[in-house]
Amino acid sequence: MIRPRWEWALEDDTGRRLEPSLSPVFTAQYDAEQWLGEHWRQLAGSGAVVATLLHDGAQATPAIELRVP
Image (cartoon, rainbow, N blue to C red):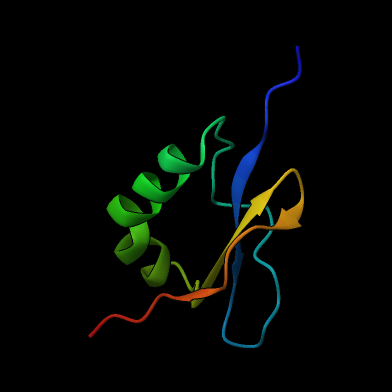
């Protein structure tokens, strides 16, 4: 059985994707969203300004800005 893959594509302020990805791979959308909620400040501190949730490599949600107020 193949499980769905959810992961965050993270981009810097120039629109370039951060590689290697700082996101683990998840088997549930809920887990991926919870992880981003817990780690977005750390990711923003590492240079990520936009996060896009991918489901099996395809964009699943609108991009989210990671801006520290």
